[in-house]
Length: 81
Image (cartoon, rainbow, N blue to C red; front, side):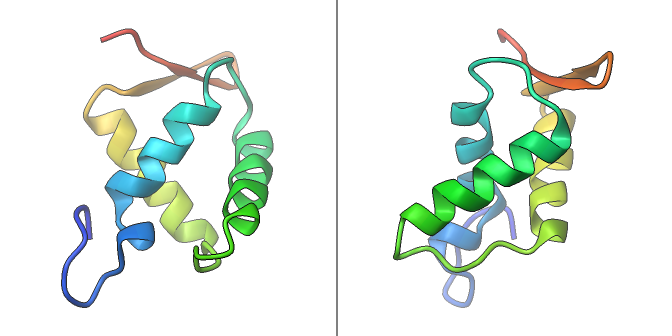
């Protein structure tokens, strides 16, 4: 689930989704704006499968747990670790 496996394609692994999130968090964003940006980014890549919202949330949980993002005043920020 976190890493790609034989049955889980690379674009569905939480580490890959998290990398997309971190790229888009060059400036702080709300969760809803980030969700829209992730969907359009993955649509632009014709090789990616559509991303369900729950996988997006799991990637945010993963990034929060490892200290990659934080939530302040309703916006997600990339941490500088």
